Length: 239
Image (cartoon, rainbow, N blue to C red):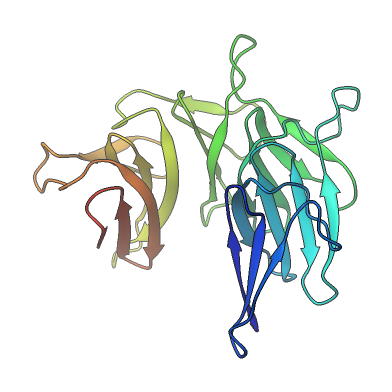
């Protein structure tokens, strides 16, 4: 890739040319307009489209070759619009479908102009979705802000809250042991939880566990075969 893309909170989208070291800024008032200057998330899909999630105005999708943008926003009169203006995460599944985690549930893009929204919480509390993962079996995992984990191959979703290190779910990862057993790792502000493919809690790691985490505020995890990479708020990177 020729460019490095940087999301900012207040200054829009920055594009660094790796060859010339020139930095360009794209914002909502620039000639090439993006949807907001307050950005939460960037994601590049397998078609090399750049998905840009904002804090207050929905999604911009960029054709990075032509530098053209398509915008998706929430419209309360249109049930197929994006369910909320605040966007937390993107994920592309095994069928190349794009999922969007928003302040008002998970949305599945139809490949054109619409979305199907899955409001995972009950009628009293629509969950804000911070993280999404699909495991090798095709099972979808969704991490919410306050209500733990949801998983499903189809509707209805199974809700998991008991035994987690915390119900504020920030990230997922999947690893596979040398024996071929899969584990789903759930990063949260209270530590790290290991689940089996059925969603049953296997282990919890925090500041009091053995081995213990130096900082239990786990912001991100990434699986690399049988190795788990862990990013925390105050103790750097570990594996």
